[in-house]
Length: 171
Image (cartoon, rainbow, N blue to C red):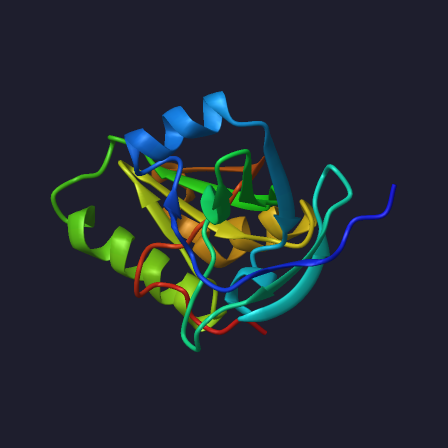
């Protein structure tokens, strides 16, 4: 069965930030469109949903898609954007910082990550940022050098959405 292409021209809300949309998502047969984090910054793209629907997404300039955004909602259909999980480094600051380290360690971590132009997400004592391969974890252990006694560095796979204002250009 071939269906006509549908066009989504706006973000109607987010199922993770709006309780009424989340409830509708449970009731209406939903479709998802998977995109990468880098694609989420594009305002024009053509994708297929998990149910095979051909979808053109044409958003106003400056729009940015987020995990859970609803781009189409009718009485019997909802199309939701799903970001693809990606490899990230997780740098957790241990609670063994001495008074002299309270400023130095976080500033040096931020400086190192910033010099590599990585977007970050902060969550408690954890800093998340994208990596291409687990081999980069060893590079960061070397870059952080003497601070490693205060850090736990590991890899993970997750849907990564940078903090607002912390989504720098990546090389």
